[in-house]
Length: 184
Image (tube, rainbow, N blue to C red):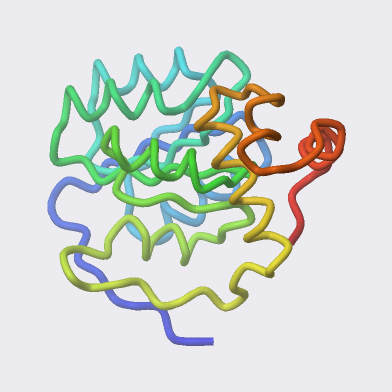
């Protein structure tokens, strides 16, 4: 495994972590504090909006799916309050369509769980033409297929019949695929 890249956090080291998985949130907050960030945490869209409005941070890691809504709502508020913020959207339900949506509304990067503190640090702090190192474990062919199906499903406004028609697939087959967890 490659050595972690050294980064300059700058003067404003404020970081908002927003995730409804409490144990994950605590571990990540501790790891990011050790890396020099001033961390503020929250577990809901409401908490994220409050932090983004009152004390817009320089950096943010926001879970896509929260108990009370979609993390992209917080990305929009934060981008409005602090246009220079570096925002990473983090989710356990990774799909290309949601990654595209996150970047379009202002996220700097998008990571699927499980992501460790080093992955998150690289995503938060890589700038310009610098690219973070390639993933240790790239997506499998099954995962790429699943991602494509999810993207078409999102583009069809989550309409199973329309998605099945566009993919030239039987509707029940598509329903079975959508009901399963994503492959590794």
